[in-house]
Image 1 (spheres, rainbow, N blue to C red):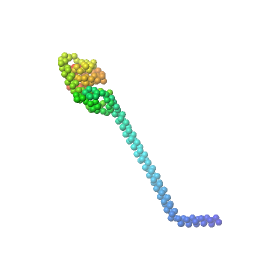
Image 2: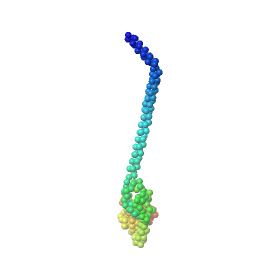
Image 3: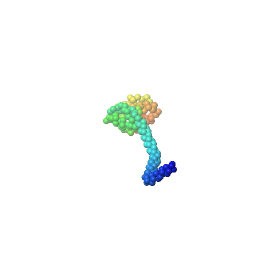
Image 4: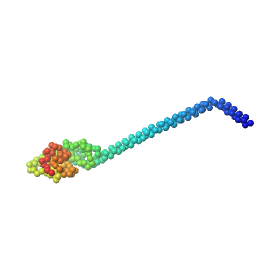
Length: 218
């Protein structure tokens, strides 16, 4: 009895397979295609992840480098305090940037009509606590005229290391601005070691030195 039942079930299965054979084959092929497609997409995703990570790392490195460069640039261009005096309309201390030049400071202070820029280096870079003195065209003229009548009586040279501003302005060709420059140089560098060191003072070139050297001793 059991054998007959088993045979009947096999016959039913064969009938089913025979009847739906085409559908079963189609479904099997579709399943295989779907499996292959999913496998290919999975492999493609793995291959694409590595370049993406590399790109992210490169972008991060570039961003970090740019930020460091920007930070370094901002640290170099710091705020400084500088002083400007002499033939300007607004003598005062000004907050500037360390990359600024004398020209930018002069623009803020505004020159007077009698300002003499022949001895001023407008391209010089500013430094913290620096003092800029803009001479007047009248400094040399008035000083020379004032002392022309006294030049014959003045035979005693002035000691560069003890002279005050009033002493220096007694010298023909030295006005208040140039006298302050000499005193500032002495304050920053110490006592003069020789008369020739006068040529190191800003605004005193070889020609000016030749006219002044006979009036000084050290």
